[in-house]
Image 1 (tube, rainbow over the protein chains, first blue to last red):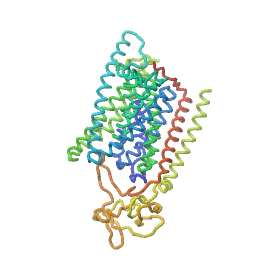
Image 2 (image 1 turned 135 degrees about the horizontal axis):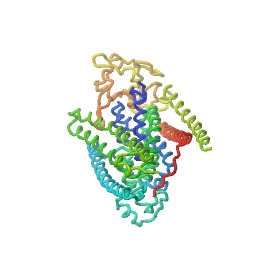
Image 3 (image 1 turned 90 degrees about the vertical axis):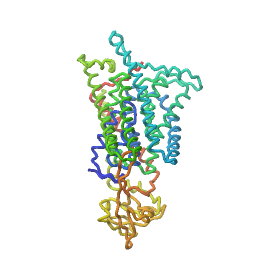
Image 4 (image 1 turned 90 degrees about the horizontal axis):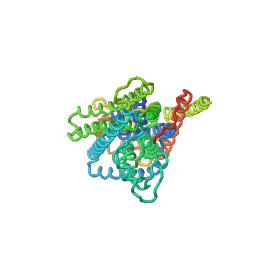
Length: 355
Length: 179
């Protein structure tokens, strides 16, 4: 047991290292901070709600640096896209926080927050699942007919529509191979920022799909670029939380140490898979988080009467992290077998790359 | 050659990471970090160290001696006004309005009688333990900048340590061909 004197709780430090490692792996792989998983987990460990949010946001900033360093090495970062989006995101986050305060004044924040989370995440899950399944079918067909399958297959036509908007200035994102109006990038950043500020999370789970389906970046670049953006937006969030006294620095430190191992594995794992594999994991993380949020919403709407709803929400939130880590590790394991010419399940060849 | 470069990178950044970790751990456990962090009173009340009375109950309340102490040691409390610098070892403030309510703590014979040092509350549908810790304290705004700077530095050092490690192991991580 370790006495976290600032947070005011005693708990085993290994639990924080383990949490950091699991969320680091998922975050490094799908390009999200993982706030929607970590904050509830920290509350379950006994941290007060405000401390859980502060520790989570500060650890996300540090962890994202670890993952960004590796994604830079893999060539997954488009600096122009990332930096152009940061401005919009910061503006959006501030508006999201104001919106949250307004709903708080109306006495609705808890329920509105969870309802919004559930609607946004279900919408993203459905779209990502449908698109990824279509992309995966194409990859399977190409694989069967012996055609060379590229690293990325996206079937969505939305990026073409947004890339046609000719509002100046037009920017060229060399790494992402995208030419697009700067306003589209800034507005996407602002809208995802509003959601992030309102929901109290980093917003990666909204921004990664937006970069893929609106801007037209490949999944790997969306993941790396989003992590770069999280360094800036997470750093700002960490500053705000720290100034309000919501951060226990040693808890953050233990989580970052765990995240170093997890984020390395998650980031390196992206080199073994195709875009649809990352999008599948992203969509599963969304639906699992939705189930957790839905159970918490049901618990609150029933006046906190049914303790089993809160219990299952905890089980889902913690179980989700381990399930996703297991899924990522399985993909890497099968990718290595596939590369060595060993037998793999039928669903693997279309999701992993053969070097 | 690559492995030699990797080894140098690994050793250098590992040393930086370990150094930063030891420095942060040392300042935290020695109480230096909390004295930077806990800055001044945000409200009128009594500065306390809440760990000493966390086992108090309604049946077995704990009494805090009120006085002018430079450092809170044990069951002691120092009266503070909004804006006052806090005595050392303070980790929370029992607000005057809490004392007036007499539900969690009250004044008795010139001492503070603590009956309910913590309560179970709800946040985002999860239950958590709400204590006097960290209540009514204004944080030093510079500690925010310090936190962020340290976190980013530690993240960078750990990231480059890991990069050096994979270089030593000969794990070839080429840039991904995206298109």
